[in-house]
Length: 189
Image 1 (cartoon, rainbow, N blue to C red):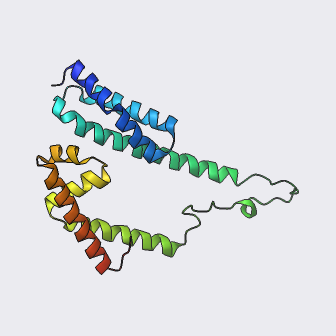
Image 2: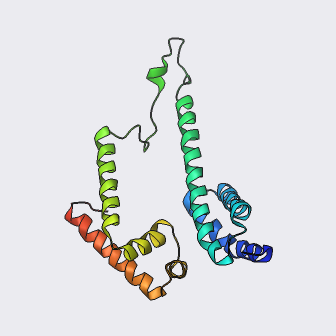
Image 3: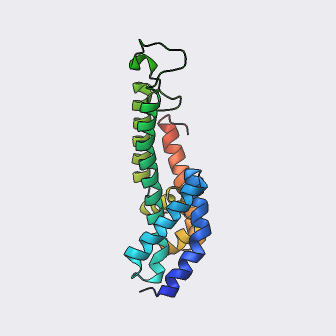
């Protein structure tokens, strides 16, 4: 069970790195500060009674989930904003304004993407996930922690209970195996 001092020291230690991670993910300083603050509050409220050794992994998971929650909220917010912003009259238009003529999807949005492109992307992601699942357990664990959870080598080694060299070896083997298997299926990343 972590003491208040251990929890406080842990949060002070992880604050800057968590902020950099959040800024990298959301590209907004203000939003990143909110995300880190929310993650720290959730850790203190719900997991403050856990042992100090478990705090890094719990905090990393909470931070990642908080970032995902931010993107979910932004997606909903942007959907409504883009729907309503395209519905207004443009300068110089008359009273015979038709909403359907005025609505234009934003470039780069999924509304512009063809159904065939969406289907191809979903198939590609499914193949990638399937290939990741085929990796040996230790390689998959190291790969996911390092590249999907954005943990550094030392954190991954501590979480896996092995040396940093083992983590590097597992990650290297995983990336080479994934690259070869995806290339064999015609997927170039």
